[in-house]
Amino acid sequence: MNKKISSAFMLGLLALLAACSKITQDNYDKLQTGMSYEQVEGILGQPKSCSDVLGVKNCTWGDAQRHIDVSFLGNKALAFSADGLH
Image (cartoon, rainbow, N blue to C red; front, side, top):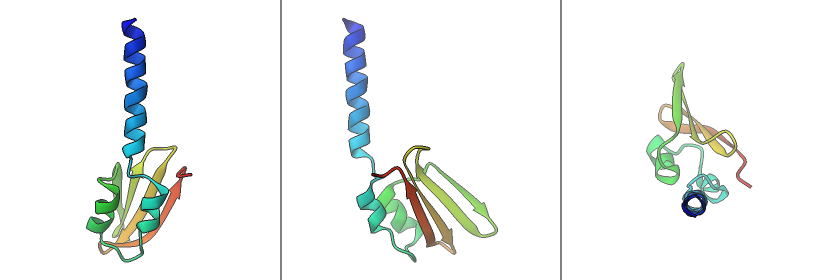
């Protein structure tokens, strides 16, 4: 019986975390070219990862199935894309 409770608890917790995710179409629609890194972070939270190549900072929020990618140049959002938000 404890195994069933644990499984149900974990499924509920995962559902709650998914519902609280900031990686949504609504938040993606709030992004605008020219926003600062701090403004984007205010909408999406902390990114999962960032890399910096030749002055362009590329950051990813989310995971392989559902994510938002934003490229920054001089601390301003240059381009963004998303996958799996629907």
